[in-house]
Length: 88
Length: 400
Image: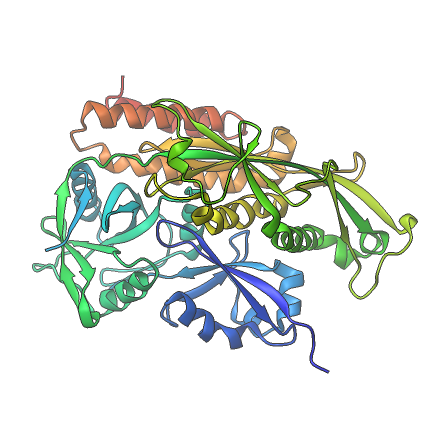
């Protein structure tokens, strides 16, 4: 049976207005697997993209490898999408 | 050549930061866009880096998150600046190009400023992902008009007793409440209604018809759900995962009082309320209510979820928002450390202006901001440290 989709919310804060995108996702999928899609939706380069919870805690690689349901229970269902903005 | 507007004081400040650093400096340009022209109202120097050398800079992610969280809707980070120390020629590197492409996908007219401390160049993304130089127009852009959105609601949060008894669940209780409140308001949002002077507003009404005369502020209230019901209080049930609550004895009820006001800056005054729907929803839910619930204090003795309150400061003429608890012990427990770091970063922004000649207008703007920071800091145990720094700045910036 296909698990019910959960909705997680990504908020981009670069630009004059913060924008949130609801993202329906299967609870057993890893967050890592949806990052390329998120990256495309916000237009952020995949090397620059970073995900943080509401308290500003940046999700680690281990977190990103966990199923969405675990991440939502631990960090909440709302995440900030941040462009690292690397310069050289 | 395309234009953008910025006050020359910020150009001098950016150069000054670059001259005084052996490593690359980095910062954000804060402002708005009108008729396709970016207007820079302020700069914010990055103080915390993941990586910072002579040839590269990676700002700390949390620094950007904090900055963007306290900015209002309508005014935000619309560009970046950095330095190439000791470089004789100003250029936009391959890495800088990649970042500008990425940032321009998020904000089309993103500006990138590069300096070596002496010379300074301004870039934007052109056609075919190639950078092009843009020209600054040096003036002090006007701050946009805004209205204040008000939202008040009493929520009964019913929590399954099994959650309270479970050590793992209780640790993440704030997160559980955030998730359920989010789901509730997202579901109810379609039934939202703007109200001005106790009268409902049509969503296709232009904001301009309600804007009062200069120096007066428009307050717009928002109701979500229950539009025709007299029931003022809503109930949200937090279930133990996989288990439905059926008996009223199986949960405890906490009261959550939401009272918030937030500024919405208008890119143009002919905008309709319905065009602001997503803007307001994002700000109210993601950046305000849920952030506060995340940082809330749950008092089981008083059966209350206590939210921090908003505190507004005028940063270069526009409103930024910090949060605090009225009860000092909650502040010390929850928000003191974060607020201390934010306040230090905010006031240290003005160190870079010490060597520069400031107009009386900018002196007034900075003086007002420092007074507001002083008032805010008085709620915390670190007040004296900040006050000493404010005295230092007041004296060295010659603010009378």
